[in-house]
Image (cartoon, rainbow, N blue to C red; front, top):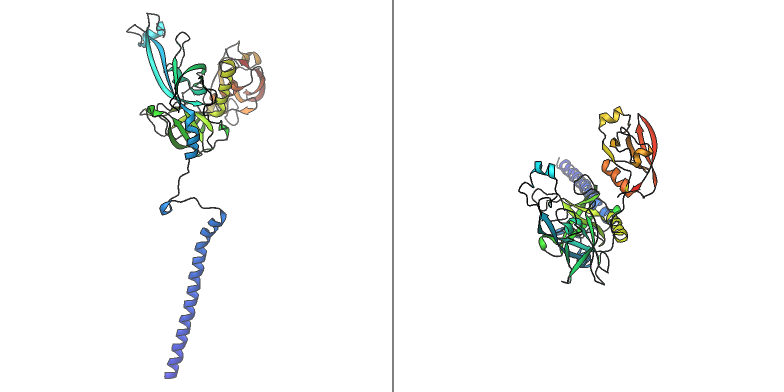
Length: 394
Protein backbone atom coordinates (compact mmCIF):
# COMPACT_ATOMS: atom_id res chain seq x y z
CA UNK A 1 0.00 0.00 0.00
CA UNK A 2 2.81 2.40 0.90
CA UNK A 3 4.74 1.35 -2.20
CA UNK A 4 1.67 2.16 -4.40
CA UNK A 5 1.42 5.66 -2.88
CA UNK A 6 5.10 6.31 -3.55
CA UNK A 7 4.73 5.23 -7.19
CA UNK A 8 1.62 7.45 -7.70
CA UNK A 9 3.39 10.43 -6.11
CA UNK A 10 6.38 9.99 -8.41
CA UNK A 11 4.12 9.80 -11.48
CA UNK A 12 2.29 13.01 -10.51
CA UNK A 13 5.61 14.80 -9.92
CA UNK A 14 6.91 13.72 -13.34
CA UNK A 15 3.72 14.89 -15.09
CA UNK A 16 3.90 18.27 -13.35
CA UNK A 17 7.53 18.73 -14.37
CA UNK A 18 6.69 17.87 -18.01
CA UNK A 19 3.74 20.29 -18.07
CA UNK A 20 6.00 22.99 -16.68
CA UNK A 21 8.47 22.44 -19.53
CA UNK A 22 5.69 22.67 -22.10
CA UNK A 23 4.27 25.87 -20.63
CA UNK A 24 7.70 27.42 -20.30
CA UNK A 25 8.47 26.55 -23.91
CA UNK A 26 5.24 28.13 -25.13
CA UNK A 27 5.84 31.28 -23.15
CA UNK A 28 9.36 31.56 -24.51
CA UNK A 29 8.04 31.02 -28.05
CA UNK A 30 5.40 33.68 -27.51
CA UNK A 31 8.04 36.13 -26.29
CA UNK A 32 10.13 35.43 -29.39
CA UNK A 33 7.14 35.95 -31.71
CA UNK A 34 6.20 39.21 -29.97
CA UNK A 35 9.74 40.49 -30.39
CA UNK A 36 9.89 39.79 -34.14
CA UNK A 37 8.16 43.01 -35.40
CA UNK A 38 10.62 45.18 -33.51
CA UNK A 39 13.56 43.17 -34.82
CA UNK A 40 12.15 43.33 -38.34
CA UNK A 41 11.66 47.09 -38.05
CA UNK A 42 15.26 47.52 -36.97
CA UNK A 43 16.43 45.38 -39.86
CA UNK A 44 14.37 47.33 -42.44
CA UNK A 45 16.08 50.69 -41.82
CA UNK A 46 17.44 53.12 -39.24
CA UNK A 47 15.10 54.25 -36.51
CA UNK A 48 13.94 57.86 -36.37
CA UNK A 49 16.12 60.03 -34.13
CA UNK A 50 14.76 60.29 -30.62
CA UNK A 51 15.36 62.79 -27.88
CA UNK A 52 15.12 62.35 -24.15
CA UNK A 53 12.38 59.98 -23.08
CA UNK A 54 12.13 58.41 -26.54
CA UNK A 55 10.40 61.46 -28.12
CA UNK A 56 11.04 61.70 -31.88
CA UNK A 57 13.07 64.84 -32.65
CA UNK A 58 11.81 67.40 -35.20
CA UNK A 59 13.83 68.04 -38.39
CA UNK A 60 16.68 70.51 -38.06
CA UNK A 61 16.31 73.45 -40.48
CA UNK A 62 18.89 75.73 -38.89
CA UNK A 63 21.28 75.50 -41.85
CA UNK A 64 18.47 76.15 -44.33
CA UNK A 65 17.46 79.25 -42.36
CA UNK A 66 21.07 80.48 -42.19
CA UNK A 67 21.34 80.33 -46.00
CA UNK A 68 17.94 81.78 -46.89
CA UNK A 69 17.07 84.44 -44.28
CA UNK A 70 19.68 86.97 -45.56
CA UNK A 71 17.99 86.94 -48.98
CA UNK A 72 14.62 88.16 -47.66
CA UNK A 73 14.20 91.94 -47.58
CA UNK A 74 11.82 94.38 -45.93
CA UNK A 75 9.73 96.42 -48.41
CA UNK A 76 8.05 99.73 -47.57
CA UNK A 77 6.06 101.69 -50.10
CA UNK A 78 4.35 105.09 -50.09
CA UNK A 79 1.77 105.82 -52.78
CA UNK A 80 0.02 109.07 -53.58
CA UNK A 81 -3.71 108.36 -53.79
CA UNK A 82 -6.44 110.80 -54.63
CA UNK A 83 -9.45 110.93 -52.33
CA UNK A 84 -12.72 112.33 -53.70
CA UNK A 85 -13.99 115.57 -52.15
CA UNK A 86 -17.64 114.71 -52.63
CA UNK A 87 -19.42 113.46 -49.46
CA UNK A 88 -21.40 111.08 -51.67
CA UNK A 89 -18.33 109.36 -53.12
CA UNK A 90 -19.00 106.10 -51.25
CA UNK A 91 -22.70 106.02 -52.05
CA UNK A 92 -23.42 103.11 -54.48
CA UNK A 93 -26.15 105.08 -56.26
CA UNK A 94 -23.78 108.02 -56.77
CA UNK A 95 -20.97 105.75 -58.01
CA UNK A 96 -23.33 104.02 -60.44
CA UNK A 97 -23.85 107.28 -62.31
CA UNK A 98 -20.50 109.03 -61.83
CA UNK A 99 -18.06 106.14 -61.51
CA UNK A 100 -14.98 105.93 -59.30
CA UNK A 101 -13.00 108.83 -60.72
CA UNK A 102 -11.82 110.86 -57.70
CA UNK A 103 -10.85 113.83 -59.87
CA UNK A 104 -14.39 114.44 -61.10
CA UNK A 105 -15.16 116.74 -58.16
CA UNK A 106 -11.62 117.85 -57.35
CA UNK A 107 -9.89 114.89 -55.73
CA UNK A 108 -7.41 115.67 -52.97
CA UNK A 109 -4.03 113.88 -52.78
CA UNK A 110 -3.31 111.63 -49.82
CA UNK A 111 -0.40 109.36 -48.83
CA UNK A 112 -0.99 105.64 -48.37
CA UNK A 113 1.72 103.40 -46.91
CA UNK A 114 2.17 99.64 -47.15
CA UNK A 115 4.70 97.21 -45.71
CA UNK A 116 5.74 93.76 -46.78
CA UNK A 117 8.57 91.47 -47.72
CA UNK A 118 10.60 90.70 -50.81
CA UNK A 119 12.96 87.99 -52.04
CA UNK A 120 16.36 88.76 -53.58
CA UNK A 121 16.51 86.58 -56.69
CA UNK A 122 19.77 87.81 -58.23
CA UNK A 123 23.09 89.08 -56.81
CA UNK A 124 22.77 92.32 -58.81
CA UNK A 125 19.63 93.50 -57.03
CA UNK A 126 16.46 92.08 -58.58
CA UNK A 127 13.81 91.61 -55.87
CA UNK A 128 10.48 89.82 -56.23
CA UNK A 129 7.50 90.83 -54.11
CA UNK A 130 3.72 91.18 -54.30
CA UNK A 131 1.99 93.83 -56.38
CA UNK A 132 -0.20 94.83 -53.45
CA UNK A 133 2.92 95.51 -51.35
CA UNK A 134 4.07 98.01 -53.98
CA UNK A 135 0.74 99.44 -55.13
CA UNK A 136 -1.26 99.33 -51.89
CA UNK A 137 -4.91 98.39 -51.50
CA UNK A 138 -5.93 99.64 -54.94
CA UNK A 139 -3.53 97.25 -56.67
CA UNK A 140 -2.94 99.86 -59.39
CA UNK A 141 0.09 102.04 -59.96
CA UNK A 142 -0.40 105.52 -61.35
CA UNK A 143 2.20 106.64 -63.88
CA UNK A 144 1.61 110.18 -62.66
CA UNK A 145 2.31 109.33 -59.02
CA UNK A 146 4.79 106.46 -58.88
CA UNK A 147 5.19 105.01 -55.39
CA UNK A 148 8.35 105.58 -53.40
CA UNK A 149 9.78 102.19 -52.47
CA UNK A 150 12.51 101.46 -49.95
CA UNK A 151 14.18 98.10 -49.45
CA UNK A 152 15.70 97.12 -46.12
CA UNK A 153 18.37 94.44 -46.52
CA UNK A 154 19.48 91.92 -43.92
CA UNK A 155 22.75 93.84 -43.35
CA UNK A 156 20.70 96.90 -42.23
CA UNK A 157 21.26 98.83 -45.46
CA UNK A 158 18.22 100.72 -46.78
CA UNK A 159 18.05 101.49 -50.50
CA UNK A 160 15.55 103.01 -52.89
CA UNK A 161 14.08 100.63 -55.46
CA UNK A 162 12.82 101.11 -58.99
CA UNK A 163 9.82 99.24 -60.38
CA UNK A 164 10.79 96.96 -63.26
CA UNK A 165 7.21 95.82 -63.78
CA UNK A 166 4.07 94.63 -62.04
CA UNK A 167 1.49 91.98 -62.84
CA UNK A 168 -1.91 92.39 -61.22
CA UNK A 169 -3.15 89.02 -62.51
CA UNK A 170 -0.68 87.09 -60.35
CA UNK A 171 -0.17 89.85 -57.74
CA UNK A 172 3.58 89.94 -58.37
CA UNK A 173 6.00 92.85 -58.80
CA UNK A 174 9.66 92.98 -59.75
CA UNK A 175 11.93 95.63 -58.22
CA UNK A 176 15.55 96.62 -58.81
CA UNK A 177 18.06 98.16 -56.43
CA UNK A 178 21.59 99.35 -57.19
CA UNK A 179 23.60 96.69 -55.35
CA UNK A 180 26.04 93.88 -56.00
CA UNK A 181 26.98 90.52 -54.47
CA UNK A 182 23.69 90.13 -52.61
CA UNK A 183 22.63 86.89 -50.95
CA UNK A 184 20.00 85.03 -52.97
CA UNK A 185 17.73 82.01 -52.71
CA UNK A 186 18.06 79.50 -55.57
CA UNK A 187 14.90 78.67 -57.51
CA UNK A 188 13.17 75.39 -56.76
CA UNK A 189 10.69 73.43 -58.88
CA UNK A 190 7.21 73.91 -57.39
CA UNK A 191 5.74 71.36 -59.82
CA UNK A 192 7.48 68.61 -57.81
CA UNK A 193 5.97 69.64 -54.47
CA UNK A 194 4.10 66.98 -52.55
CA UNK A 195 1.40 67.42 -49.93
CA UNK A 196 2.79 67.19 -46.36
CA UNK A 197 6.30 68.26 -47.49
CA UNK A 198 8.09 70.51 -45.00
CA UNK A 199 8.32 74.22 -45.90
CA UNK A 200 9.55 77.41 -44.23
CA UNK A 201 7.89 80.83 -44.58
CA UNK A 202 10.36 83.72 -44.24
CA UNK A 203 9.31 87.35 -44.02
CA UNK A 204 8.65 90.38 -41.85
CA UNK A 205 5.25 89.92 -40.14
CA UNK A 206 4.16 92.97 -38.14
CA UNK A 207 7.59 94.53 -38.95
CA UNK A 208 9.39 91.73 -37.08
CA UNK A 209 12.28 91.34 -39.50
CA UNK A 210 13.68 87.97 -40.59
CA UNK A 211 10.98 85.82 -39.04
CA UNK A 212 10.98 82.10 -39.89
CA UNK A 213 7.96 79.83 -39.43
CA UNK A 214 7.67 76.12 -40.15
CA UNK A 215 4.83 74.12 -41.65
CA UNK A 216 3.90 71.74 -44.43
CA UNK A 217 2.38 71.93 -47.88
CA UNK A 218 -1.33 71.55 -47.20
CA UNK A 219 -2.45 71.46 -50.85
CA UNK A 220 -1.32 72.49 -54.33
CA UNK A 221 -3.19 73.98 -57.29
CA UNK A 222 -5.66 76.00 -55.23
CA UNK A 223 -7.95 78.12 -57.43
CA UNK A 224 -11.20 80.11 -57.28
CA UNK A 225 -10.14 81.93 -54.10
CA UNK A 226 -10.88 85.44 -55.35
CA UNK A 227 -7.33 86.57 -54.55
CA UNK A 228 -6.14 87.31 -58.09
CA UNK A 229 -7.19 86.84 -61.70
CA UNK A 230 -4.67 84.05 -62.30
CA UNK A 231 -4.76 81.54 -59.45
CA UNK A 232 -2.68 78.41 -58.96
CA UNK A 233 -1.67 78.64 -55.32
CA UNK A 234 0.32 76.51 -52.92
CA UNK A 235 -1.55 76.19 -49.62
CA UNK A 236 0.52 75.93 -46.44
CA UNK A 237 -0.02 75.94 -42.70
CA UNK A 238 3.29 77.71 -42.03
CA UNK A 239 2.34 80.84 -40.10
CA UNK A 240 1.80 83.80 -42.46
CA UNK A 241 0.64 87.15 -41.12
CA UNK A 242 0.34 90.76 -42.35
CA UNK A 243 3.83 91.81 -43.45
CA UNK A 244 4.71 88.34 -44.76
CA UNK A 245 3.34 89.25 -48.20
CA UNK A 246 6.07 88.96 -50.82
CA UNK A 247 8.25 86.78 -48.59
CA UNK A 248 9.78 83.42 -49.38
CA UNK A 249 8.32 79.95 -49.12
CA UNK A 250 11.32 77.61 -48.99
CA UNK A 251 11.58 73.82 -49.13
CA UNK A 252 13.79 71.61 -46.96
CA UNK A 253 16.66 71.99 -49.47
CA UNK A 254 16.69 75.78 -49.12
CA UNK A 255 15.11 76.41 -52.54
CA UNK A 256 12.53 79.09 -53.32
CA UNK A 257 9.30 77.29 -54.20
CA UNK A 258 6.78 80.09 -53.62
CA UNK A 259 6.08 83.77 -52.91
CA UNK A 260 3.80 84.18 -49.88
CA UNK A 261 0.80 86.20 -50.99
CA UNK A 262 -2.40 85.80 -48.97
CA UNK A 263 -4.04 84.22 -45.95
CA UNK A 264 -7.53 82.98 -45.22
CA UNK A 265 -8.58 84.56 -41.96
CA UNK A 266 -11.71 85.62 -40.13
CA UNK A 267 -9.68 87.54 -37.55
CA UNK A 268 -7.12 89.24 -39.80
CA UNK A 269 -4.31 87.06 -38.41
CA UNK A 270 -2.94 83.57 -38.82
CA UNK A 271 -5.45 80.73 -38.83
CA UNK A 272 -3.41 77.99 -40.44
CA UNK A 273 -4.30 78.67 -44.08
CA UNK A 274 -1.85 80.63 -46.22
CA UNK A 275 -1.28 80.82 -49.97
CA UNK A 276 1.84 81.28 -52.06
CA UNK A 277 2.41 81.84 -55.78
CA UNK A 278 4.34 78.76 -57.02
CA UNK A 279 7.91 79.30 -58.18
CA UNK A 280 7.32 77.98 -61.70
CA UNK A 281 4.69 80.67 -62.29
CA UNK A 282 6.79 83.34 -60.58
CA UNK A 283 9.81 82.56 -62.76
CA UNK A 284 7.76 83.02 -65.93
CA UNK A 285 6.42 86.35 -64.67
CA UNK A 286 9.94 87.52 -63.79
CA UNK A 287 11.27 86.58 -67.23
CA UNK A 288 8.52 88.54 -69.00
CA UNK A 289 8.86 91.57 -66.73
CA UNK A 290 12.60 91.67 -67.31
CA UNK A 291 12.28 91.31 -71.07
CA UNK A 292 9.09 93.24 -71.87
CA UNK A 293 8.19 95.18 -68.73
CA UNK A 294 4.87 93.34 -68.68
CA UNK A 295 3.60 89.77 -68.76
CA UNK A 296 2.57 88.61 -72.22
CA UNK A 297 -0.43 86.30 -72.12
CA UNK A 298 -2.53 84.53 -74.68
CA UNK A 299 -6.21 85.04 -75.44
CA UNK A 300 -8.85 83.59 -77.75
CA UNK A 301 -11.14 86.60 -77.36
CA UNK A 302 -14.09 87.15 -75.10
CA UNK A 303 -15.63 83.78 -74.23
CA UNK A 304 -17.87 83.50 -71.17
CA UNK A 305 -18.06 80.00 -69.72
CA UNK A 306 -20.05 78.40 -66.90
CA UNK A 307 -19.64 75.25 -64.78
CA UNK A 308 -21.28 72.16 -66.20
CA UNK A 309 -24.04 70.90 -63.90
CA UNK A 310 -24.73 67.12 -63.91
CA UNK A 311 -28.23 67.45 -65.41
CA UNK A 312 -26.95 69.85 -68.08
CA UNK A 313 -24.11 67.47 -68.92
CA UNK A 314 -26.60 64.66 -69.39
CA UNK A 315 -28.82 66.76 -71.64
CA UNK A 316 -25.88 67.85 -73.79
CA UNK A 317 -24.47 64.35 -74.10
CA UNK A 318 -21.28 64.83 -72.10
CA UNK A 319 -20.52 61.29 -70.88
CA UNK A 320 -18.27 61.97 -67.88
CA UNK A 321 -19.73 65.37 -66.99
CA UNK A 322 -16.37 67.13 -67.34
CA UNK A 323 -15.98 70.39 -69.19
CA UNK A 324 -17.22 73.98 -69.24
CA UNK A 325 -20.26 75.35 -71.03
CA UNK A 326 -19.84 78.25 -73.43
CA UNK A 327 -22.55 80.78 -72.52
CA UNK A 328 -21.68 83.92 -74.50
CA UNK A 329 -18.96 85.16 -76.81
CA UNK A 330 -18.18 88.03 -79.14
CA UNK A 331 -18.45 87.51 -82.87
CA UNK A 332 -15.14 89.25 -83.50
CA UNK A 333 -13.28 86.91 -81.11
CA UNK A 334 -10.71 84.46 -82.44
CA UNK A 335 -12.72 81.60 -80.90
CA UNK A 336 -15.92 82.54 -82.75
CA UNK A 337 -14.09 83.06 -86.02
CA UNK A 338 -12.55 79.58 -85.62
CA UNK A 339 -15.96 77.94 -85.16
CA UNK A 340 -16.64 77.83 -81.42
CA UNK A 341 -20.28 78.58 -80.58
CA UNK A 342 -22.47 79.29 -77.53
CA UNK A 343 -23.88 76.02 -76.22
CA UNK A 344 -20.67 74.12 -76.94
CA UNK A 345 -19.03 72.22 -74.11
CA UNK A 346 -15.24 72.62 -74.06
CA UNK A 347 -13.69 69.43 -72.70
CA UNK A 348 -10.00 69.89 -73.58
CA UNK A 349 -7.56 72.60 -74.61
CA UNK A 350 -4.37 71.82 -76.50
CA UNK A 351 -4.57 68.18 -75.45
CA UNK A 352 -5.21 68.84 -71.74
CA UNK A 353 -8.48 67.68 -70.19
CA UNK A 354 -10.25 70.52 -68.41
CA UNK A 355 -10.96 70.65 -64.69
CA UNK A 356 -12.96 73.87 -64.52
CA UNK A 357 -13.20 77.37 -65.97
CA UNK A 358 -10.19 78.60 -64.01
CA UNK A 359 -8.12 75.79 -65.47
CA UNK A 360 -9.20 76.77 -69.00
CA UNK A 361 -8.26 80.40 -68.34
CA UNK A 362 -4.77 79.42 -67.17
CA UNK A 363 -4.22 77.16 -70.19
CA UNK A 364 -5.24 79.95 -72.59
CA UNK A 365 -3.02 82.54 -70.90
CA UNK A 366 -0.05 80.16 -70.85
CA UNK A 367 -0.43 79.11 -74.49
CA UNK A 368 2.21 80.28 -76.95
CA UNK A 369 1.14 83.46 -78.68
CA UNK A 370 0.65 82.84 -82.39
CA UNK A 371 0.03 79.11 -81.98
CA UNK A 372 -3.10 77.42 -83.33
CA UNK A 373 -4.28 75.00 -80.65
CA UNK A 374 -6.79 72.13 -80.88
CA UNK A 375 -9.83 72.57 -78.62
CA UNK A 376 -11.99 69.53 -77.89
CA UNK A 377 -15.70 70.35 -77.99
CA UNK A 378 -18.92 68.39 -77.52
CA UNK A 379 -21.72 69.77 -79.67
CA UNK A 380 -25.13 68.11 -79.75
CA UNK A 381 -23.67 64.95 -78.26
CA UNK A 382 -20.83 64.64 -80.79
CA UNK A 383 -17.14 65.19 -80.15
CA UNK A 384 -15.51 67.64 -82.57
CA UNK A 385 -12.27 69.60 -82.68
CA UNK A 386 -11.95 73.33 -83.23
CA UNK A 387 -8.55 74.83 -83.98
CA UNK A 388 -8.27 78.32 -82.45
CA UNK A 389 -5.39 80.80 -82.89
CA UNK A 390 -3.94 82.23 -79.70
CA UNK A 391 -3.57 86.01 -79.81
CA UNK A 392 -1.76 88.36 -77.47
CA UNK A 393 -3.71 90.22 -74.81
CA UNK A 394 -3.68 94.01 -75.14
